[in-house]
Amino acid sequence: MLEIGIFGATGRVGNLLISEILANKNTKLASVYVRNELQYSIPSSVLVTKDMESFVNSSQIIIDFSSPEATIKLLECAKENPTPLVIGTTGLNKEQLEFLHKCGNLMPILYSTNMSEGIAILNKVIELLSSRLSDYDIEITEIHHKYKKDSPSGTALTLAQTVANARGLDDNTFKMGRDGVCIRNENEIGIMSLRGGDVVGRHTVGFYGNGEYIELTHNATSRLTFAKGALHAALWLKKQNNGVYSMKDIFDL
Image 1: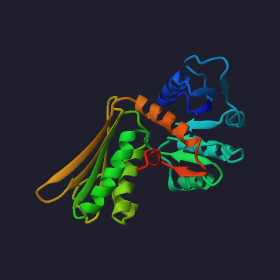
Image 2: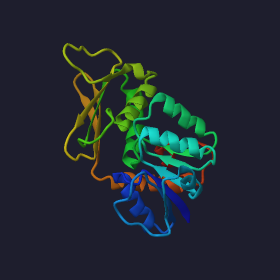
Image 3: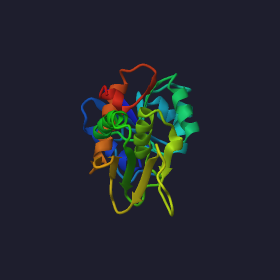
Image 4: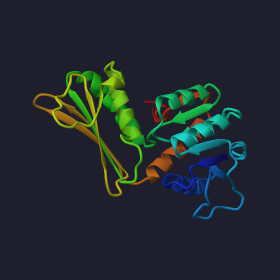
């Protein structure tokens, strides 16, 4: 039975993760890291702590849906006592991502900006289309609920990086929104963000040619998708060697 710690337990996905772990016969909720009191009850056998070291030491693997700053603190502690990590935190900058990959030399880490199988497959499909439809313009749009902090979403940036890599481009080609007189440049990858209501997540990658276009859309209708995906990732990661993995690795894409 895999003993799992939850980092970011007060968040929406964290709450769902706890329910999924408790309901799964192959997993056990070992510990929960909190800054404030939980607003729901959990078994008394679970360690609930504000002490990072105690939290890390009590778990065989940790699932993290928190903030960039909190994720870095978790990594700093985990590298002293190498512990497998599933990280779904979005908004990490280049320096933070470099540190995450460095920590992968010490322990297995699965990092993904989106834990759904559908997004993993979408990434594979757009990789193929980007190389085959090399003269098509690419635009990415995303919409999330009005409380989402980072923009563009981590998933949108991952999709953009996938198509850029497929075409041998870098992130200097990313165009975040448009305003005023703004003629589209060659090789530009447009990224547009919308925020409103309670939308869980919608991502569209469009390939626009002369006389035809293709649009591929992934809709997340429930955060439970991310919780189930993260738990699947944890069960897969426990068997892996040190390194940094993604959801594409799980599905062998």
